[in-house]
Amino acid sequence: MKTWIYARQSLDRDGDGLAVTRQLDDGRQLAQLRGWRVARELVENDTSASGKRDRPKFQELLAAIEAGEVDAVVAWDMTRLSRNRRDTVRLLEAGEKRKITLAFVRGSDLDLSTPAGGLIADILAGVARNEIRVKSDRQQAANRQAAEQGRRVGGRRPFGYGPVVGTEEHVNEQTGKTEVREIRDFNALVPEEAEALRAAYRDVLTGVPLGRIAREWNKRGLTTTQLTRDGKPSEWTAGNLRGVLLNPRNAALRHHVDETLRGTLHPVKARLQSIVGRATWPAVVSESTWRAVVDVLTDPARRSSPNRSGVHLLTGIAVCGVEGCGATVHAGGGKGGKPGYRCSATYGHVSRQAEPVDAWVTDVLIAWLSRPDAAEMLRADDDEAGDQDEIRAELSKLRGKLNNLAVMHAADEVDDQQLRSGSKVLRGRIAELERLLVRVGRVSVLEPLIGAPDVAAAVRAMDTDRLRAVIESVMSVTLMPPGRGTRTFRPETVVITPLRSGR
Image (cartoon, rainbow, N blue to C red; front, side, top):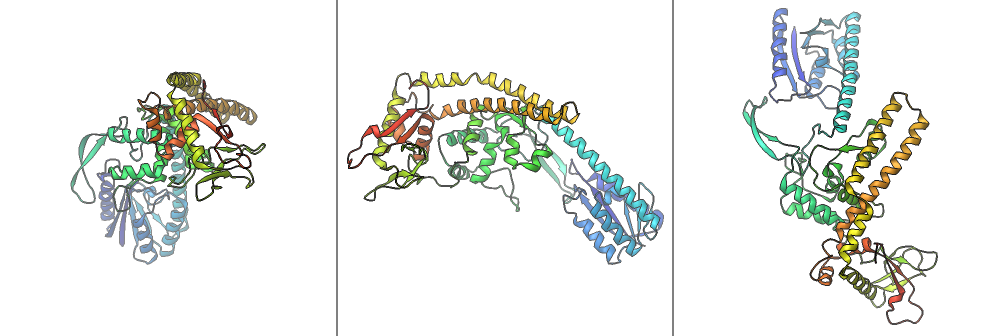
């Protein structure tokens, strides 16, 4: 009989291929006992049969069966051949058509030329599918427990974490060569990458576009931990940098996205809503800084353009002062080729030249930040927001209550109405505390300016993006109509209101 041997291992943790080697040895012995001639041996190592990954060798086997090139297939057991309904049906239909025999090292032969053989094969496949579901449930429970305990469960190396702490040798099954594999500590920081992340968080809070940060990282030789198809490290873009900065991991927060969130929310939103507590690894930045950046990057009004250098100083910040309007202003309305601002809602409302308005707002900002008590007012704002450790402790407690409420609902200890009302109260308080941490994090925007030897020089040296971020965190600006026939700038037509206490 023309016999093919098929061997497969779902997960080769050590990369040595020993599991499939044993399957092949046992398959050869079985074929020899039956007096069958082995024509081909197919091996798929580190490949799941659950249907989520292609199995080229299995496809080759099916094609050979359909072409009449196979009389018998030898495998360790039915689960090595198929563990999903689609592949099982294809295998059985092809086998019954060509009257082949399935022989198993751990199991009885199945003669697919008979109805009894097909029935037994279908039963065995059903048992295997149930095992997959049970294993999936166990894995999800284990992942949830690891998240609640703040532990990492695996995956690609996160940028900023996992310095190399040693090496080990292993044999590559495909090449037969001994290779050296790196050992990493994922509970420790990679110094250069961690510092780059800290600088990126500061830059975002001071208005630097993500595209500019990404270009600077690429120039420095920093790469993502994701490889391209040709095996080379990927370069940074505004998109993948945004994903890294939004990850709770960098604030030493552990998240766990359950199936409900995964199926209903965007991955980023699901991650932000599924924080379960503190992680065991060190934080790159404080939670307040992380939340402040999340607030910036997820703001619906945030511009998505990779280049914001053309935005005027007060575009989208200042508002129209015509009674009942309050719309933001944008570029336009200037005369004689000079830049200007005008109401974004109604053409007949405010229209002002930009240069004198920008100069006045900048002068007021410098005066505020140059006051002797500026540093004290900054600390007062920080104190007003509350103690960060106390906020984080209460957040951890509330998240635990939210998780317990979900568990109680699953166990029918609380009904749907109790779940909804309890979740609403808890999520409301969690959101309130998270806003406090955002406020604390935004304080860092002003730290480089307050106490500077020359505040005026420091402010005027800032690029437009950074200066916009400072203005937005300190003041609200309302532009009033200058009045008919007015040819000189009147400061009283630019209403500046402090957003921070004490001014």
